[in-house]
Every structure is written in structure tokens, then in C-alpha cells.
Amino acid sequence: MNIIGKKIREIRMTQGLTQEQLAAACCLLGFDLSRSTLAKVESQNRQVTDYEIRDFAKALNVSAGDFFVTSD
Image 1 (cartoon, rainbow, N blue to C red):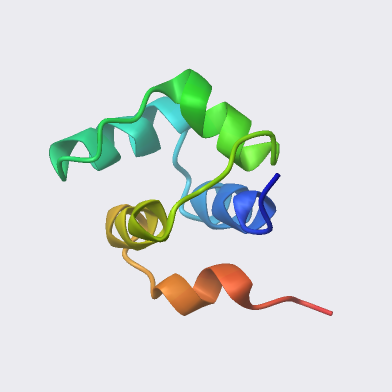
Image 2 (cartoon, rainbow, N blue to C red):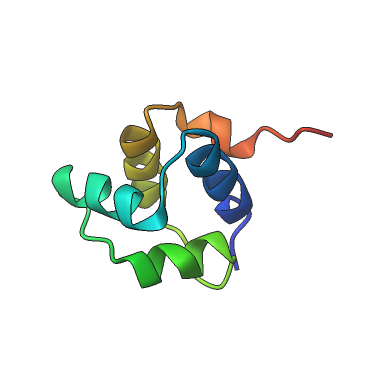
């Protein structure tokens, strides 16, 4: 379980990226991530490390803190 998966999906979709495209962007940054692993993260079925949070932020060109901002 993780608390940022939904936010990663929201940001990815806002940027018009597919899971494949985000996984590819992560791989270009040296973060070996498959589309299926990304799907597990986004559905909150996989833990996310602090290093992975940093890498997702780089790939999406956002601050790591953006994953913890709620719209409520």
C-alpha cells in the first residue's frame, strides 16, 4: 500500500502521458520501471521507496512534495 499512487496517476494523466510513456521516461533517468510495476504503484498495491518518489518526481518534472498535496 502507498499514499502517492493516485497522485502519480493524476499528474501523469494531466500531462497526457500513458503508463508506457512514464515508465520509459523513468528508464531514461536510470529508474528501471516496467508498465506493470507502475500500474501496481498507481493502484496502491506496491510500496514506494523514498528514492522512487524522487525518481517519479524527476520523470514527471514536479516536486516530490506535489505527491502529498491533496485537493480536499
